[in-house]
Length: 130
Image 1 (tube, rainbow, N blue to C red):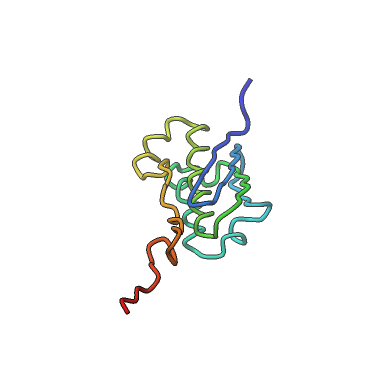
Image 2 (spheres, helix red, strand yellow):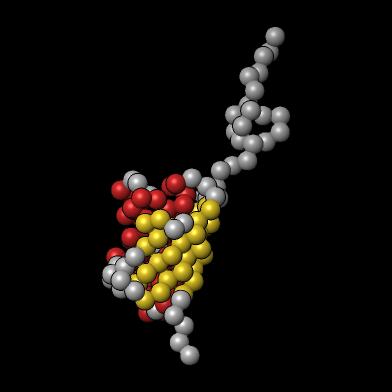
């Protein structure tokens, strides 16, 4: 029995993308919308396409994504990470190509939490000597 759908989870900041990849014609839908309408900036659209361009699969697979949390930039990074993981599940021979371009690495940078007794993560309340 062959698997027709491949799955990958992508994360970036607080955004989580669940990516399903299947053989097809190159349709990419994010939250039931075409990715060009969901991500309206060129840089976010290129981030989504980049793993597919590296793998030469831009017109060979259909991708369906459910993404939640975070902002637009975090979501595009999460989708990119998820697509990369799903591509490796689809064809393990693509792993060295994607790994070399750091597509499989989880970007762990998060917003630093606010600390008690301070205005923010690092900013302090103004100190008055007198």
